[in-house]
Amino acid sequence: MRRRRSLFLGFALFAAGSAAYAQNPFSDWDLFRQIVMIPGISGQEAKVMDFIQAALPRSLKVQRDAKNDMWFTVGTGHPHIMFVAHTDELGFTVDKITPQGLVRLKGRPGFLPQACEARPFVIHTVKGPVEGVMVPRPDYDAAKPQPYNPETHEMDLGAGSEAEVRALGVAEGNPVIFKKHIVDLGPGVAAVRAVDDRAGCAALLAAVLQTDWASLKGRTITCAWSVEEEIGLNGAAAMAKVLKPDYILAIDTFVSSDSPLENKRFADARLGAGAVLRALDSSSLVPKPEISKMLKLAAAHSIPVQVANSRGGNDGSVFIAGGAVDIPISWPGTYAHSFIEKIDSRDLAALTALIKAVITDF
Image 1 (cartoon, rainbow, N blue to C red):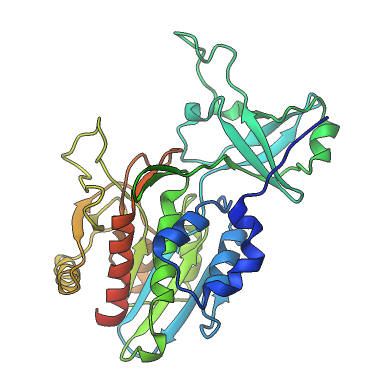
Image 2: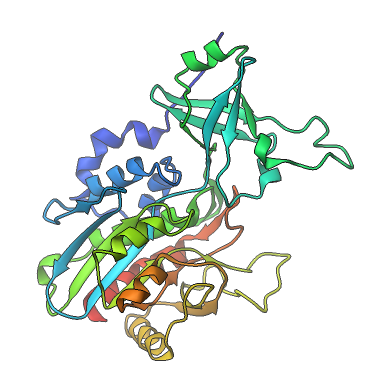
């Protein structure tokens, strides 16, 4: 059987280039385009964490817990301000390989199931990526197809037997993600799977690389990257047991209604208009004085910021019980949890600038 496998260019260069990241603060947009291509489904985020840790200055004392959450803390005194961005993305794992050579998958929550049909996916194995196609229903393109059952996800790798599949390195538990391709829709506007929350990871990393940590005085700053947000805020919950900040700023996507068919009465944060303060979502409510404080800070630094409400939760909500004030900050994104999540680089730049302003002047 003939089979082609390919490595993402950014990943092939990871070992050679990662050491330079600590000395060369890449822009948030450059970092985003690298981080978004790294596979890291919920529970298997180690490669994303390794990339970020390799980029951090060696002077920072980085910690990783048993779940693979990662953070560092700089400074002393109060307030203690903590940022957190989640590294996991939606995907599947290999559940079973059939005698006929099909790969049965175990689903993870979050996708619109029928959007996966007849789409290219990649299995990440110890031998490298293995590409295949999600098997559609026999009548998926008919006017009235059979009901779609997400429990029967199967991939066709072009193999004819279980032995051929295993020879490729495929094994139970391997992560499976949509075959990513960054679609540049215009200058500084792109669509790709896993913008949520790799854009947040990139903004936080860029802010860290552009901050003079030796000059930090009169406050404590913790910067963290969490795991398993998409399946229950599990990583943040683990960190909340050992970290007790005064303020927690969860950096995550704001699911915007700035798309052609959506009602603009809710979640109306426009792409290209700046970062977003998530004043209200399904897990938290930001006190009004803190919103005013953030807006004044943004204005003082000429940072465009929008205030809007959304559904969904955020990693910061699990720190509230420990006494923290939760102030979720975001960029506006459309088509969330799809394969074409859309982002504007101007919003990412505003978010990075807002993080830096909070670090130094909050």
